[in-house]
Image (cartoon, rainbow over all chains, first blue to last red; front, side, top):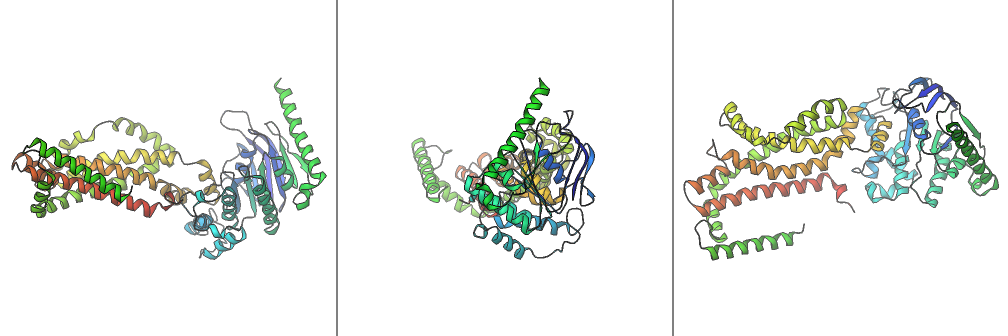
Length: 265
Length: 245
């Protein structure tokens, strides 16, 4: 469903972050991408989201080369990206209002989009995410968890088939974090979403990613993937297999850090 | 700001004024009571000039906002525009635009347009620069997440840049009220027979009616105050999120 074909990406005059990188993601798969800061996690997500364009090579989603944000790809960021001047309800409605603003042009809005009332859809997703009581509050009046739920609702109300998340739970306390991890698993299955979850947090990655892409030091030339088929089961978090997997991912991260250090020396 | 504090402050100022006037016993500092009497006695006259002045101030602010806000947002949103026009703003910003009033008078004659244009010229830059900076400093997460919802340039303008600039626009309008009233006086002392500036100038320098002079000054102050309160009211209506707790 998503295909990186010989993707090279470099920020102006720096060495490339990705160098002829090939990677493919199947429909409905749940991926976690893990790596330290500056290792290209966010760059990878921006490329997937169409907010950055490869220097060379191409990224294909559903047979379509991505050179701008794709209407059916949803993005949820750490900083929520909620409009501070709009209520939770207005924030959740934002994507639909943008779609009604353009009409079904196939560029900003899927061609099959029907311009119409959005109230009922917004209410449905406020309820599904359990934030209907916050509907008339402003983001500053909500907790971090509620804001993140609003950001997820705002994305899912557009019925995406791909969901990209960038460190979405980094600022949350542990119980809220686990709550939202569970919710993410539920929603991913319920909506049959193709999920790419970018994080620097081992537990996030191992709990959510049935496949884990490990990003060591750039430039990345080939994907390093760890299979993690048990991800998403609620009990997994307290099983020894979970901790073994965490250790394995950590080792892999350290391994690549060592290789990079050796290369520098 | 609480209403009670406002009333107390006003009373204290009036008391000090009264005391000073009684102490100095000069014609050029009448008591507030004498000024209040003159205000009532000349109410028709003052009202006529207030309407003319009020129109000029409001028209200037409205025109300046409608020119400067889109320009500021454009420069904040489109780097190429900013590169071209920022140097121009930079070199013209510190020039006291009021010095162009005589020149504008030469071109437009003693007209309403000349007065309004002079005030607009001054307000334009006061509004443009903060609005541009606000747009430049919008958080990238905000822009990226709204772009990912499908927003292109037009939708970003409508759903992000425009509403995000509202508080700063209202702040600059509030500042503009003070500036506009000050510039207004200057533009009204010449080449007109209508407006509070003219009235004050006439009463002080020709008629030598000092109580009426002060009454005119009070009217000018009230004009600014009313507009100021109006902007406060607008802000509560348009930016409820700033007042939510």
